[in-house]
Length: 222
Image 1 (spheres, one colour):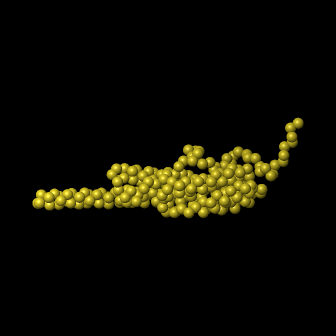
Image 2: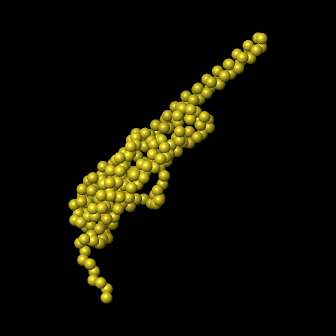
């Protein structure tokens, strides 16, 4: 009878010891994961800041370009609508997306705006009065700097996500992560042509053709 009682007590002691070890390990891993997740969220906030900086430049850019005679209205409309589409996205500014779908929606909207801006800048190259406009040149330089910042902050975000996801998937942290509500986070995905730096500079030294509305049609070739 005494042996049985001792056996039960020993088993309970072992269970209690394992529970204490598990709890201590869980606390350590929890603190580590919290720190890494906070780093991801901080990097996400920086991504939001640089994208917002670009969005804030667009109204001034559109107003400046509108002053050019016969500028393509469809190009301006595309930029304005793309910016509005980004603004309608319901996404937490200070907390990284929890799902790949959320991040893909954000990236798709920002990509649409990038394409519209690129189109606007290419069209603007045909307008000498814009290329000579100091305000336009300044806005163009600021956009270039912002695109570079976006690339830098996206890389920093992906690095923070990599550190976090590596910890979540590593043993023995993987044992605790799911129980404590820590799950892997999505990365920014490279878009086609992303290996090339964005081109938003104009070659001011080379002559460019005048807008289509200001040219005289060439005589037909006999």
